[in-house]
Length: 330
Image 1 (cartoon, helix red, strand yellow):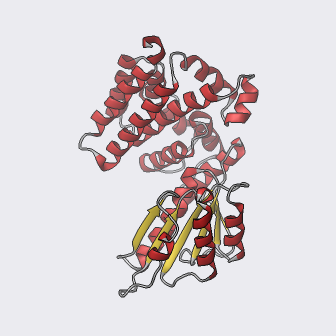
Image 2: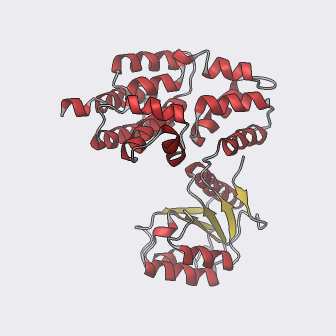
Image 3: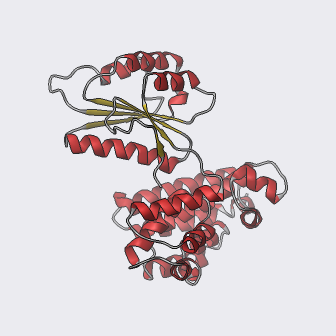
């Protein structure tokens, strides 16, 4: 399922406003605009900026007329965190956007930076809604949409089984759909999902992640090697590792309470709250930070940033398992 869009669906509109906190949908909104711009002009210059990089005057420099009249896409992430002076620059630009330039504003929504949000809407920006999908029904609709987008059929039972097996991480869900579409011919049913994500538990990315965050390095490495040997995509493993470490971090910083209350607060099913509570023994905030860095490095390694994806994954698994025991070493 693609993010919801406004009636103005011109990908090369002068301004696109992507609103919400779902990272996958925000990234897709950016990729769609960049792809459309590069289709129109292969030499399109893309600038992807954080609030710290977009200082007062920077936008004017990036959007000033060029002798070569080049097409440009300027992406501003976390626009709600821009400084007051930079927001003034952006608002002024919205009143008179430059030709051949597409400005993409990523905004979390909410009260912070609402003036910029309102100004972009008033200026007629193309809007893409990228909300967090906290309800199981929303994630189920997302999975169905992913299969439709890829031109494949999946039964309702298969879609539900996939959501039950994977959980709330949209990147993991999207990766799982892609893997099933690539590997399976014909309609994807519940039995197929079961073979991939239940019957092959020993080879699943979640087994690797569970053993790693529990500090069981040897078992995690064994599960990792078996997963790779049986064809599990490395990107699924990094996604599962990230999901596992983030769950530890979320729950360790949350206030105490019943699993049902924490489930609503953190967007996890109650059964997962109980599992993560058991897994988080031994973790410290520094350990979580170290593990997240290790996952990020592994993710870059399996996506082309390194020469040996298997080594990148093994290194991450060992680092995470050690971090899981950091309190005990303290």
